[in-house]
Length: 449
Image (tube, rainbow, N blue to C red; front, side, top):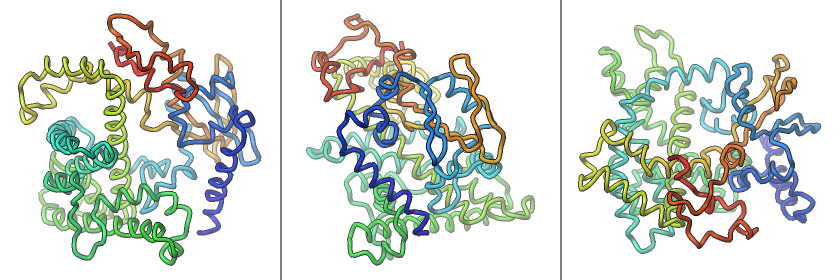
């Protein structure tokens, strides 16, 4: 296990060394390797290189980098392209996941969990989110709230997901969580939220260092990381076991339309009259629970933080959004809002425009990976009308951050129009290299109409 993790550790050290070199030596290629900074760099690296699609060739293999929308469509519509499991499997730290597997196994997970993503679920999410936002607003009124914006947003997002997807946690848990007064059950040293968020902060350590070494490490941060890993695993096991008891009691009545995600996973992991052999093992069930806990709340929390910060940079857009909210909701209270009545009209207002524009500038996943299966044939890709064949094993990285900031697809609209007032605070950022690539300055929700 330690031998397998050495390449990741070596890569981290190499990247630190490369970042310390003069920019003139690395600026044409290093930005493509810094995955944590891809959203910040946007289209700039491709613009400097003068190509929207190129192939990087090395002894370690071939990597196709692209921000071309047409190439992206080919990569994700052609079912012959697969997922680079060797890269995505880092998410399989508790068991196989939808994201960390490919082929029939990944499709099985999608088939099992797919029914959860329905209009009924969206209705519940809308109602739960409206109530949760009210609680978050109260927490944001505290004098030190700005210091904890990321943590508060993550706790709201996690609680909402757990209530909807797993029937786990309550509004009371959210109130305590937003006050950083989480309850810790007997036998645990961390709350559920502390364990999950602590694991996410220390994911690199968990992946790179053998767990036995972390337990014996003299560094408290290492011991905390493995404690987060162990206790989150315990929370998920307890959640699964408790639901299994409930499912066993109701199994004779069949499934119901209001099953949540955990119900679907539990049903797939047990035998029944209609399913003599379980579809999923215990590790597969736990793997999916972790993936949805992690991916299901992290993206929403990041989006919420980005919206709050970007609106703080643009008070004139705050005012426009407030006018739309007053027009659409009036004096009604959150408890009366509903998905069927309010969602569509909100998404067709400045509210939806702000959400979409924030997603454009601060993409949920800055890079989407695909690959030519190692045991398959060469696959064609067409770039600017010319077809190229990609050999087996080629990894393709679709840079969504660059695509979303590409001037060809998202041209800078004429400034000074009645629809797009600009704050003078941002007037000179395009000439200030410290502000590049000026994502906050380029914020223009009115481009969505």
